[in-house]
Image: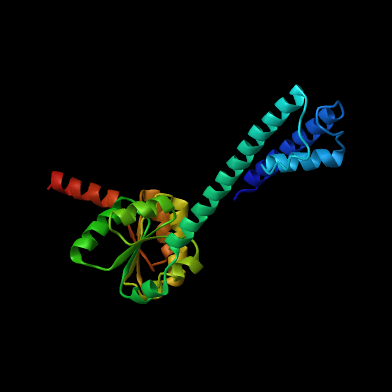
Length: 246
């Protein structure tokens, strides 16, 4: 969870408590409640009201106080409900990401002579189709939980992981793999993914898909001969040119 979100939630609760305590105290000083309200009573009443406990020992008697309490209840419940929903959603997203990315010990034992597809751009998705047709064992790694779920629905074995983290990539037994194919649209992440792949791959073959000539140039410099850089657009253009001028 981001610091900004935590700050917003905290400020919302503080402002709501200040509104409740302040309003209860002021109204209580003018006969709005069944007893004369002290600051402690105001804090107590605000908390039990917002928590929907409502013991009934302190209650409004004037019209203004009743209206104030109704507003406090509606705003309080709405605020707390919104925060709970937001926190629950954040928690569930973290759990989904964790479980989608985790490799069980059983799955880990099966990762041998497999192909690791990092990223799910056009080339890797085409490769996934071809590898499926050939009956090859492969997995797809993506940083997007939603994309991972979509790939699973398509029948692929997909995981959520950070391809720029050597710790996370080692979970997929890269040293036992036949090949690692990197196909990520974000060129900066692709470069970092290549650096990590070189670190964890051992003797495993590494292939990186370059989207442009400029990216291809940078990747070749970083690869240092330890990875094959492929530019599908350049290959397609050369093939078409040869076909036209044959």
